[in-house]
Figure 1 (cartoon, helix red, strand yellow):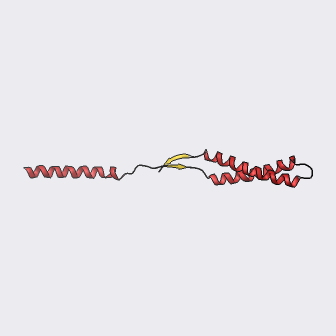
Figure 2 (cartoon, one colour):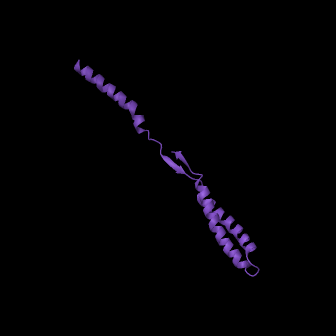
Figure 3 (cartoon, one colour):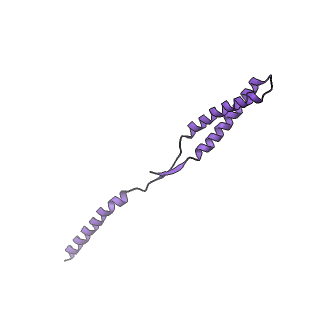
Length: 98
């Protein structure tokens, strides 16, 4: 009688272990921060800022300083365009679960 009871307990415990195995093996999904290509957008912003700044610098510069105005405007525009594009691209991040 005792052996039948022990056998029943062992079989029941084995059944529960087999049923619980998939639950234990299933891992929780990990949260990953996913951003679009920030580097590409920052590069585009740099190019657009340099062209716009160069044109503005050429227009604003005095009559004898067109080249200097263009170069300074392009440099300032490139830095500004890069920073603006980079900050805007970071806003396009979201969480994904994998």
